[in-house]
Picture (cartoon, rainbow, N blue to C red):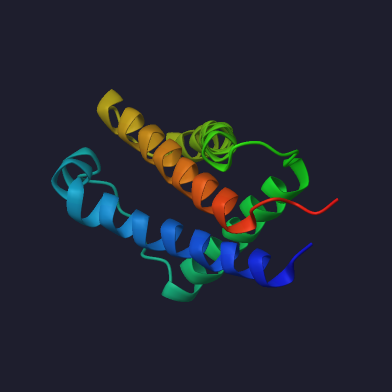
Length: 135
């Protein structure tokens, strides 16, 4: 394993996860999310929680990609991996938010789409940074 590439892929994945979430939820779709979650009291987590949890997620994505990678075009492999991880994280996140009174199917679709887009972005960048794995 090339440690420098692994760490670089983890940092880039963390940036995509952290900044992508902020752009998606707080800029692109802020009005929709605010309308969908009106009346839900939610305590804002400390920023350190998000930094650490997103880093752990980025580390897990890159590690799992590295362990599953068998060669091939980075774009195709990254998209396939990202799509699979997006489905897994999308199901996890949307089921967690089932605890809240969110009745909009639009919210569920938007959140699921976000998880897939984010994971596919992480998958492609990870594939290009990791490059050809040395056996």
